[in-house]
Length: 396
Image 1 (cartoon, rainbow, N blue to C red):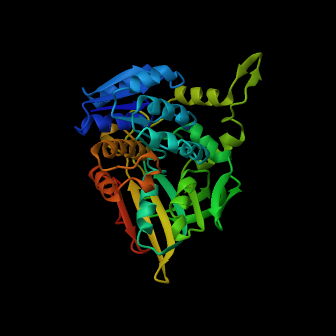
Image 2: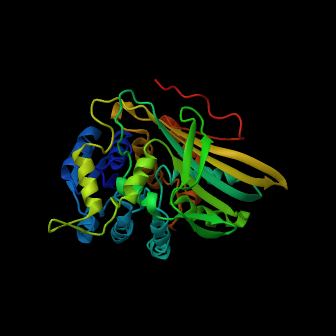
Image 3: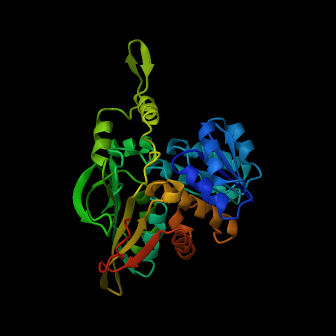
């Protein structure tokens, strides 16, 4: 069995490579990345089953050649390249999954459904942590409801690291900056509506160790597919909110234009603010967990479901708590996204997922095997009434 992780040297891709190479299912795991040094570092950490190669996903022929003969493609690159990687997987006739398309890209990806069906292939857009695990848990929480009124998906994080950095990025800073300025799309009263980015602020009490956190509306992929997946249950509202340390800093960076792709003339030199920002963050070693620091950050997902059974109102919560992976030196987000992709690759190649076409995770991933695989990796999930919450977490 052979898996290719495109973007395998990145913050989350490196985790997918390592998990896939150490579970024993795959004989070969390829870490493919534009930055060969990062790919080689990921492969070394993953052990003898992993190899590294340099890859530019804009080179369609090279990507197709790399994917040919593989059993699955895990796409961990920046979401703007999702279509390009999907088309290469289609040409190579390889099953595909990615970590999300920030709503609009996800909707574009769904348009490739007929092509993947014709090729007898499956592509899963948005099967990482959030989106991904969030979608499957939401669908499971709604399974026995006759009617679903609303889904409110909240995600909060907290950093308990002793002597940790004041700021670091545990997820693609490009994606984060887009979330901070692009309108948040909310499904309400049965239709999509745009809201200002970072609007709808509220204080929410997450289960420990995150606790009370201010969350905001941002653009996300869950509302791109869940309303259609739950259309037969009459869903009227679906939205996403997130918050935690550093989100206001990200908002300020985005408002200053540091995420812009529009070139800026600086003393006769054309400079992209986004490329400059990414290069600066890399130089200052603000991407991922700093060396020599034992990370102790946590992330909690809480999906509030409102609906009814036989006319009786029901309110329940689907929840997941994501710890850091200390022995791999990975933050909570890096670990959760990466292992979700690895679990997805395992399920795709095990015969437990039989769908074909371009299918969102909530419509093709069996919740039982997913939750069992997450539990084996130290990630708790639960579907409960509002009380009691998940048991207190160990924070030291």
